[in-house]
Every structure is written in C-alpha cells, then in structure tokens.
Image (cartoon, rainbow, N blue to C red; front, side, top):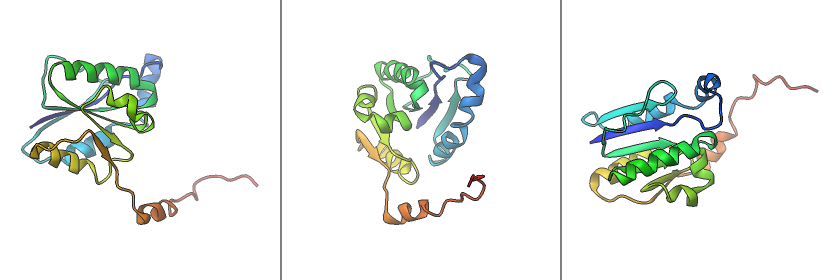
Length: 158
C-alpha cells in the first residue's frame, strides 16, 4: 500500500511567512499518522513549504490536511488526485468545520481529532470496506481529561 500525506501551501499567506505559520500545525501530526500504518506500506509526508508535490506519482491513498488558510489548495490537490483514480482522505480543522463542502472533494473525510480513529480508516481501507465519514470517538473520559490541561504557564493578570 502506498500512502502520501500532504500539507498544502497556505493560500493567503506571503511566502516568507509560510514556514512560521505552517510550523505551528504540521509535520508531527502527519508523521504520527504515517507511523500508524504497517511497516510494509510505503508512506511519504509532503510539506509544500519545503518541497513540490510530485503530481506524476500515483499512490493508492492521499491524505490531505486542510486548515482554513489552505483549503482552496487542499481541494485543488484532492480534485486532481481523485480525477486520476487515487483515493483521497481529507482531514483537519477546515474539514471538521465544513464537512459537507469537504465531501465534494474527497472519497472520505475525517471529522474531529484523529487520535485513535485513523487506524480504523487504514484497517477499513486495507479490508476493502471504505466509509465516506470517519469521526473521532469522544468519550466522557476524553472530556474529563481535557479539564486536566495545564494552564500554569499562562501569565494571568488580576
């Protein structure tokens, strides 16, 4: 199985600011996702601020991370790959906020945080039972854990 993860270039951010903004989001989460796929799979993470997407390559699956500032580019890439018969998964904050719009450009979308549920997508894909929508499971324990986040590093006034 060949899977490519792509973080598209941001649409409305000057080229000299791209690296600063994208570094806030990207490589770690995409690399964590790639790590969830079995060792026999060929995975590649492409960050468009550092390299050009090889549009001649044809992986089985392309996972594209769409944030608000790169949604137009993400959709352009998704449409291109789908036209070539590549299975496209869209995920990210833009997809979670606008799932109906994202569905128009993807074979499957992932809504919410990917933790714990991306493996389900990979297992489904390899087992031939692909779904259009994957949602992150949220449990009461997850919500309670969110309340335990550290905030002591914030300098509060008053």
